[in-house]
Length: 170
Image (cartoon, rainbow, N blue to C red; front, side, top):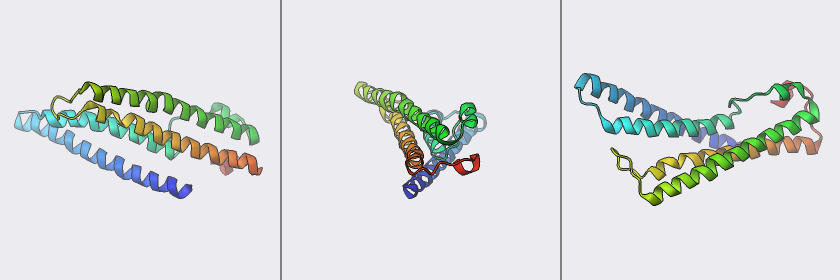
């Protein structure tokens, strides 16, 4: 399973860096076309906006996979042993639940309904529903990571391999 997580992490890193690079070039061209040429490009303005959505949401899934997401761990830091593992499992399930309800379910509904209405972007002419698919994709990746991390903790509970110090748990 760790190999699969590693491959997904590398793929997300390449994808996110590629989109970020393209986003930077779009913004640079937007600045040049606006202030040097004097005729702003509407295409790069719109493209940068949608690329930013994808970078932010796929990047959020990537940081979840690296366990570098924002977390308030005051309670977790005070716990140890079995209680700490159980708390970490509950947290992963809460992350998965949030990702499912908001990103996968809500994002899929948004994307499908937007595709059904035929809404297109003004400058690019892309269907907005395809742009909104970054929501369920990001949510699905977060759910995958949450299940993997929870399974690791459950495995530790079942095997009795319960770490006693902070250094052993991460």
